[in-house]
Image (cartoon, rainbow, N blue to C red; front, side, top):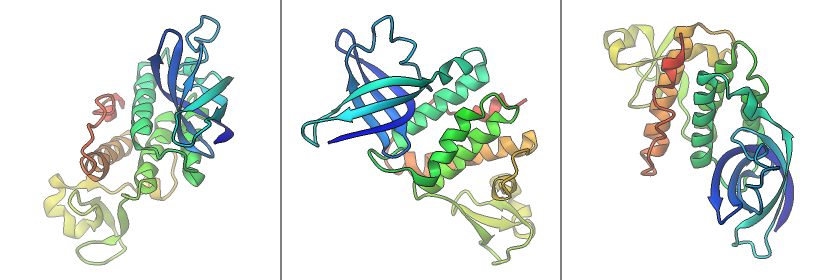
Length: 237
């Protein structure tokens, strides 16, 4: 197996004296994990940081063997996170979710747009909104997305206001009001492709995606939910 691609570093594990096992979320091949020789040398330390965009070549003699990677730094995104605690928390959350959830060696297709947007727009005022889009569409990409097209109780498509934690389906305002304390808020800003939601809308969305990522993916696969992702909504002022 042999190919080239580019992607974002989401996990780094020391292997041997100077090598690392690197995990990258890439455009054409999804999650790629491989061994990099000499990665811990002083001249290369700045390359091997979480969030950096790299170009890499991957090679293995036998398809079942671990890939060997050759790496070149393309864009040092890591430095854009280091001086902001909130951005750094979002980065560690992104990396943890990606390292567990992303499929190995599978084209991410349209979903890669939301990966790219998080990094390329990290200096914008609404950077956390772009992160929230990543989490919402991660559910869809994993095949465990929500059904928000109509009310689960009445079948109406009007005045949808809530999401049921049991079914992951929308609930209209009238049917859901008596149970509003047990329901999640309907993520209208995502569905309308609005990139300027209120802080309350953004916090509600992150609570919703946290719940359904845990319930529909991590719990289903008996996986531990990343501690760094828990309570990310709390960083919203």
